[in-house]
Image: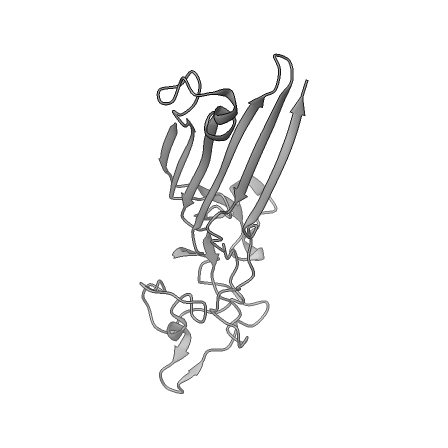
Amino acid sequence: MLVSYTGSKTLEKVALLNQQDLNLADPYATPLVKQPADQIDIPRKFNFTGLYELPFGRGRTWASNISRPLDYVIGGWELNWNITYMKGWAVNYPNAAQVTPGSAKLDNPSIAQWFDTSLWVDPATNRRVAAQEPYTLRTFPLRFSDVRLPGYENWDASVSKTFRITEKVRLNYRFEAVNAFNHPWFTAIASVDVTNPQFGRLNPSQGNLPRFLKMGLNLQW
């Protein structure tokens, strides 16, 4: 078995807040935005992989003296698994400044509202603010520091057995389940445009494979 837990923070400085920030005289002196790295900054990740040989059958702890036909049924089975949990990626910031200060992170986000969109509603008009006009200076960030997409939860598992037909001939049976519990992973916001009806909604398009089952026989000689 192999178990790992990683806590990390990955920042990038690769983007301009405004195109006017480019220093033509000295490009290396151009101020770049420091923000969570896109699809790389994963604060926490847990992984658990392993292989377990079931202790039944000829030459094993239990039922080691059973007949060969019975050993074909209960002996030689192996379990494999690969379990991964990790936090989601940081979400891009909307195309307008907040009217109300504070964090947009919600304790219980939903597909219909993944972050607090009320921070972009003008209390005076009770309407959402307009998007920033082109060719105006941006004073708000490019990416949230605390609003993240859903995390990745995945279980892969397999059951296998090798049948020893003769000394040189073997038949391997394997049953595999990819994303065994069918956890969907949503990897995008529908829109961060304050003028879009989908603003702040989670895009319910699955970014990982749905549950996939596979069974096979492999003859080796």
